[in-house]
Length: 228
Length: 185
Image 1: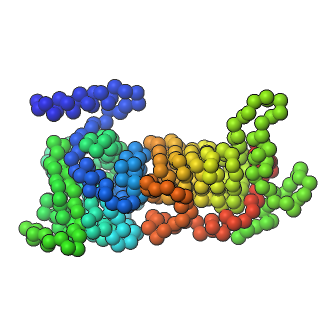
Image 2 (image 1 turned 180 degrees about the vertical axis):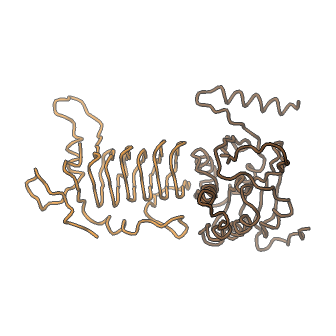
């Protein structure tokens, strides 16, 4: 067992021993720190959080960045379309869901939202997110890399609340979802979906999740190499 | 829009035409009792059955359990929206604690605290914001590190949802309470 694993287990035991502690797993994150650092120098940045409202996250980003945080829980939109049996309308819905002006957002927290979308819905949403980002803006997302094998029991559909413990750790709390994770996107699909954003960092985690940090190029930036 | 007909039909007031100004009874209710012999902290309640439409301002800490529509301004004091409180107003205060329901923008110079069971639909501007697990929040949080007056009630085109357009017009009007009892307890 690696020394880092032992330390992470010890940290988990420590955090669980306090009053009011949860048993939710805590995992390391590398891209989140880079996301915060990349926005830290900006004057009154605007942050768009596409996950559920988490008070401690609002405090974390607000205090670190002095930013305006807009919370839009798109998981609720997915659930509503599932319960109303209108999933086919989801792509069109996402074409108009983000009502913010062009280039008005400095940072976007997608968390693992795209894992719950098929390509038809993911593409228009990604297009809207890239539209709203300011040049130089950053987008933080997780993508599942583990494809469910046929014949293996499917786990119950669940979203994950990513609670920021600090700049390097995230606590993951599951809660029920109306729809399970969809087929993982290939790296090439992710790159194409978010064009013209560029992947500046990506980390493959032990949990089979890929942490990806995108950046919208500034007008003077050199052109990106073609996607193969 | 401004319905003077909806004013309180006073049963125990000498002048039926005079609008109810909540700060006056509030002050009266909060004043230290002469026999207490000690200074009590100013604390005013607006009860469950009280409905206020218009501008509510004062210089004492206030707890609202009733309904308020319009504008609330307690720039140097703490406003608590109790579990039964229903607010449809732009709120300006030193600190705001939400256990009930707020539909409108909140600006606080110190802190906004949305507790478990509390609900806010609107934009929050404050240097410190706490949102408890189990609280409902829809809107934006602005924790900009800057001094000066907060900008509650000012909706920009960036806002995720439109503000109640009737708020600004109502805010300039005197307070008219709809209640069968005094506004302050």
